[in-house]
Image 1 (cartoon, one colour):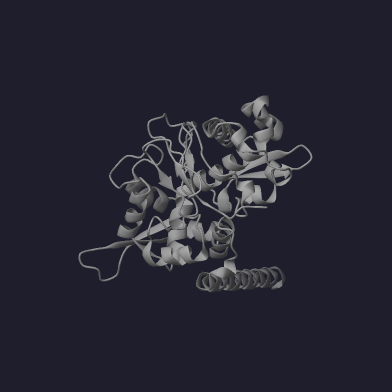
Image 2 (cartoon, rainbow, N blue to C red):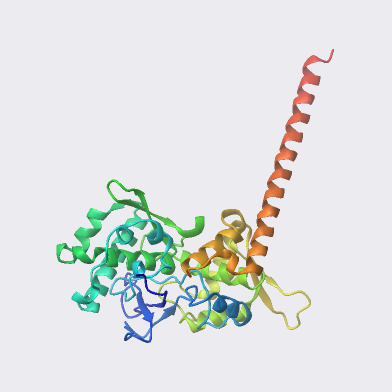
Length: 351
């Protein structure tokens, strides 16, 4: 029987090189928690109940928050409950992958830290495949974790896929069940990942999803100071260079504003001046509120209708988008018709 969903935290090893992998820690009273290092990044999007989502919208408390992802990267270990043993797995694991098609072996047959190392190895491999834009297969992944851990592959793959999605904003999607081939794509259709051309930086889509989620849940805009408060609770501080994201103020107020994912504007009539974040035009173009709500509900093992206020807002957004598309189509049709009439008139009118 599946166990009840449990919260997970991803612990990043700050002391390792840029390629070190995140550590996830299961928050469960019945088991001892694993730690990796002094640096931790919570995944507030994974909660115990729908009520916690509402609590976040009111308080933005990092311990309750529901961020869609917390990006963090590196390959040394990942500690997490097997997704396949809970009902709230990531999208890539809920629908496909070895964890859904076979019984999971007892992970305790190997020490937890050994399993963690293999999860870290697989995450490092998947990040490499993502950077090189290559597909991968189950056979390749089994070669990475070695034959000794073949029976534990469903657990290792499940945890690595969850980490890729929630920490890096990268989905591991099966494209061909016949040979178990997988493609790695950014979550929620976002086209930005922040990976530089040198291939050494880590995907930042997870953090972007986190910020966009907060904005959505707080009614389309969030005061700047509240964003910094939440980020500081996860180990990302304004004015301090982060080994994954760089300086967060630069990333949020300049890079993502220039990329069109965020708007950073002064609160009207504020004195002294205060600023707030909103979704930018590129975020509206590439994804939608309903997509975000479905994603957040899915990773929490819930249904979008469990959050009626956000669900109603997402429905309104869908309707507005539909009306906008209709208006654009009508306008294009009218312009084409007018142009056609003008050409006909020009061709057939006497000189």
